[in-house]
Length: 136
Picture: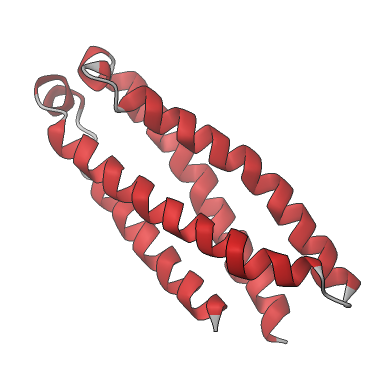
C-alpha cells in the first residue's frame, strides 16, 4: 500500500533532516559547507521522490473519493503542500548556490530550522491525520 511506502519515506526524511541538523555548526559551515550541501542534496532528492509519489499515486485517488471527509482532507493537503514545496525549493536553490552558506552560516542555520519545523509538522499531520483516516 502506498501509505506504507510514504510512512517509510517519512522516517528517511526525518533521518536525513537529523543528519543535516548535526552539521549546523556556524564555524564549520563557514570554512567547509560541503558536507551540509551534500546532506541537503540527499534530503531534497528524497523529498522530491516522496512528493512525486504523493502527487501521482496518493492524492489523485483520494480526490476522487466518495467519502467527503477523505476528499476534503486530500484537497487541503494538496493546497498546503504546494506552498511548502515551493518554500523548500527556494530554500534549496538559495543555499546550494556557490558560497552562500559560507557567507551566511547563521542565516542558513536559522532557515534550516524553520524548514525543518514545517516539514516535521507536515509529516506529523499526515501520519496522525490523513494516514489514520485512510486506514479506518
